[in-house]
Amino acid sequence: MTMPVLELRDVSRTHGHDDALVRALDHVSLAVAAGEFVAVMGPSGSGKSTLLNLAGGLDAPSSGDVVVEGNRLGGLTRSSLAQLRRRSIGYVFQNLNLIPSLTAAENVMLPRELDGVPIRRARREALAALAEVSMADLADRFPDDMSGGQQQRVAIARAVVGDRRLILADEPTGALDSNTGEGVLRLLRTRCDSGAAAVLVTHDARHAGWADRVVFLRDGATIDETPPLDVPEALLAGGRTP
Image 1 (tube, rainbow, N blue to C red):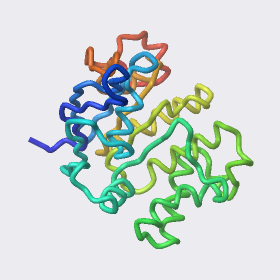
Image 2 (cartoon, rainbow, N blue to C red):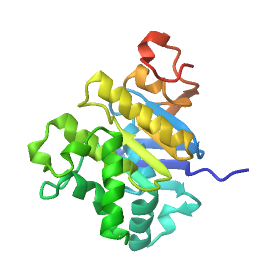
Image 3 (spheres, rainbow, N blue to C red):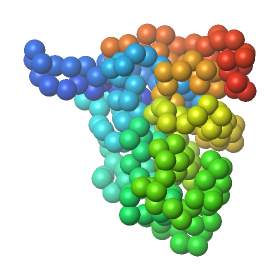
C-alpha cells in the first residue's frame, strides 16, 4: 500500500484548561494520498483552519500524530521541520503573509532560496509559478502596489513553486473574481493530477466540486466524508463533476 502524503492520526488540539477548555480539534483522523484533492468544509469555528495549521507544522497537536511523507512532525527538530516545510509543503494563508519589502518574484523565490536553490533557478521557477496564476507581468511589483486579489495570486504561486508534495490552501479564492478563482482551483487540480496531494478549506460547494472527496467538520470533529458535493454541473463552472 502506498504511504499517504499526509496523515492525521487521532489528532486533537485543545486550548485552555478545566472549565475554560476549548477543543479546537477533537480526535480527527485523515489520510491524503498522492494525487488526491480533499476539500474540508464546515461552519466557522469548526476546526478547519486548525486542521491546516497542524497539517502544515505551524502548530502542534495536544495529542495524536501528524505525519507528512512518513515524517512524524512531532519527532522532528525545529530545523528539520523547517526544512520539510520548505521542500514539501506549500501553504496559502488567509492573511497571505507576503513580505512587503520583497517583490512578487522575490516572495515566491524565498522558500526555494532558503532551501539552497541557486538564485537564477529560483527566479525561473518563481516566474513559471507566477505565470500559472497570470501574474508574470507583475513579477517586479511590491505587495503594497497590488490589489488584494493580485496579492492572493502571488501567495498561491509561492505555495506551488518547486516540487511541493503537499499543498494546503485556506480559502485561497476569497479575494478573487469567479474566473480567476476557477483558474486557481484548476491549478490545484492539475498539481494533484501530477502527483501532489492538496487539502482545501472552503465554504463554497462549487469549489468543493473540484475535489476527490469532501470532509465535513463540526465542533472540531469529523461528522461526514463524501465524494464531491452533488451540486448542479452548471454551478461547478468547469470543475470536476461528481
